[in-house]
Image (cartoon, rainbow, N blue to C red; front, side, top):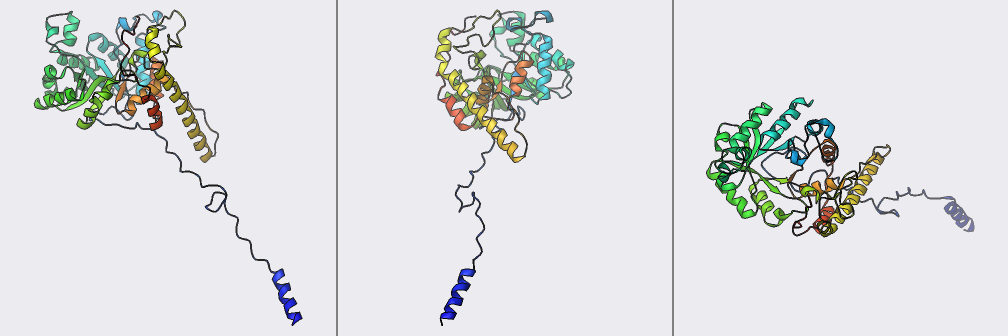
Length: 397
């Protein structure tokens, strides 16, 4: 009996059960928690709508300064520099934008802007046609008052004149959109060119407010025209369109909102601030804005700077994560500019920004908006610092 018990004990001590496999530290039974779900990289804006197609990046530019000496345009190349630009700068900017799929150009009525844009199109080494948006402001008063150029640009027949000028300069068969304003006196102006298939889309400008936009939509419907675009001032500083129902009405009616002056002439760019009133210019530069106006917008400028840091850190983190998955070294992330944050905020609200462009540097800043968009928390930081109105008498010169 004792011998049997001893044999059983020796067998039990000799047997060692197999060890269970080691748990992964990221398995449910491990010490560490499972990895959180990978954050999706935001590329497209938070909201987008509208019947007018502004391109896959929902970004365009304005050529309002081209050919205009009052805005720094000079004929001689030797006079370039600072805020001055020439025909060569326009051509290089156009070429840079077209090669990077920014093809929507807003051209004001008037021979100078058309000629300057036409020369840039013909001399640039780009074969794809641009998407042209021309705009004018029909008014009965302009028939009898003002210079010949103003009558041509603002008169009742200015729609046909502007469209024909663009078609003649570009040598194309139609323009992509024609914007007229105000709504009621100008609702019948695009009808003849539209009937002759010279205009693909029709829009309005200077129509502010949800009720006014709905009224304009009905006025164009009575003329047999579909309103596809609305050209209004909209920026971080001048954000009235977000509060008076313009964006809400445009979304309801499927009208594309084209944001004019999305940087508010530099006040909403984040580069001209109370600490930097000249925007970085040092040689022969003088401030354009009153210190009181810049002081009033200081919270907004601080918010833009904060969002720049947030986006920069987020994009750097995305690049490191992608490099780790692809087993490569992380690349360098381009610096986020305050101008790009201001334009992305306009896109996040559903509008298509059309900033003014004067040279290739401006074009490259706009192209830098591609491939990323603001997230909800970043938009909320900017929304919390929005001013209620544009500072009055802000400009010095």
